[in-house]
Image (cartoon, rainbow, N blue to C red):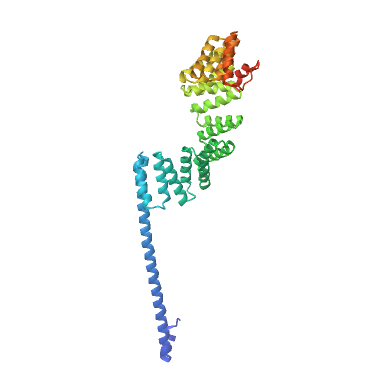
Length: 382
């Protein structure tokens, strides 16, 4: 109750008892307010102290975590493992610590322990994208591909803008034979990282495996556009051109691949095949020989050389190449079949029969028709 000075003086003179009660009430109200303020100040002080303690503890944890992770960057996984164990023991609900523990186990190839640590991390924090991704990697390295798929799915749900998680989801789906699901996953990764040549490369493989030749060619074209120094990308683009019969394009791209990496035998192998099918016999022989120089134990390379010699009508050289393929792998029915075919062309009937007999011993389900060996001649190109 607020009174002017004049009214208050009159009240005190005329009715001193009432004035005294008013003073007493106001004093009590003021005292209550002061007490409430003091309690509020004490509560704030406690909160401030708790906050300071929490911040100090958080800072200590952060410092310890950084100290713990340094040796991992330096390749000292054993030290990280010991520190991570101690950290997890002190802070059992700290999900990044369980992630670090799992990474340390994983670096030491303790896959089961790594998986358990990653699983604990996502148990504490179900939307922990990094831990789901690490769990997917560990499952994949352990051959548990279906579980890897699920882990990477959870990673993409928790962090939809992670190109890596979409990429490995696609790779895991591919390993489980689910190509139709793998393609959209790779495309999501490419949306997030369109300049990544490796993603286009992986997508090209998926399209190739699903017999989508045009899409595969487009993907590998994008890969070589983004990474023109990649011999493997050029080689795969050349292989695809070869498979669909674009021989001129195949030769151009495979030559580019062999220039970028002269030691990549696959490029020389398909270059030899493309030369042979284009009628460039001498070039086919040279390219096939180069493939063999780089990979002398590869049966297909020796068969390819034999076919190049056959195209050039060099029977003895062709026979020698096929026999070398058989020496490397006596159960290669294709090598025996091409040998039989070459013997037939050379009029060496008995030798052709012996070779053909061996084909049927290895592949009894094949039917011997007049055009059988001719069909085999084109089987590799199909």
